[in-house]
Length: 128
Image (cartoon, rainbow, N blue to C red; front, side, top):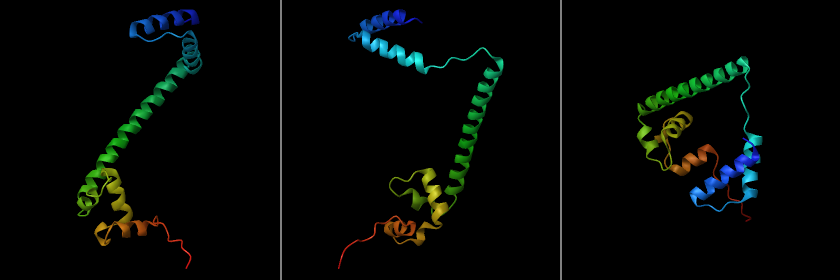
């Protein structure tokens, strides 16, 4: 679409939506969209590569969802799962990861001992 045609279409859109039209803004939008939107070439090989990449990405996302469901299912079978899930801010995946990293969470007396075990507790830095 030519710039003049876009500006006129943008003007009509602004009027329809009740916005104040600005030609400078229309030009900015046109330039941004014109410079940032790649077009697909007519080359069949390139289309095939893009389609193949999209299918691979979809397959990877589906596989990730299956693995996530399996990890959650395995973690739910462990006795410490309920204890980990009762912690504030811990979801299903984070809970499973905590169990994998820490082992039986019931061996820790309180949350401060878990923080100390992880090595993320701040040290006291005082003189005297």
